[in-house]
Length: 160
Image (tube, rainbow, N blue to C red; front, top):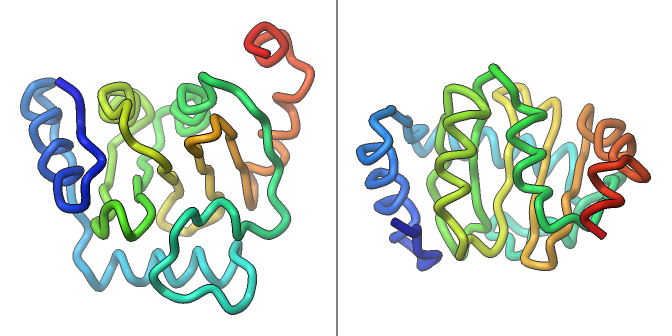
């Protein structure tokens, strides 16, 4: 089953995937989602970007970037056993989804071939990871150093 990237359908597709894989995922309340998005804008986005962003990764400040077709898988490794939040460009999907861990995140993203862009953070927004349609993995906050560490690694070099 593939999740379609059409506004309003991502949420439905994610729900179908969680039912298929028999795990739960939570949607944050609109208030919680807005707080997370506000924190992201304040910490990681250039001044002047409006609330309704498109291609958020184009507006990151102080990020590290690696081009890697499989960069989305690495995001799941970074998350590991910790809970994380999955969000999208507002034009694609307004909801923010709470995932229990990187394994559950992998199941959602693996089926979302048509996600153009997506972003992952924690409740504290201590990091922001993004993956773009250009196959670039972006890291901000504490994830910046981690993305830097991927440059020149065996995994990264094999994929280039």
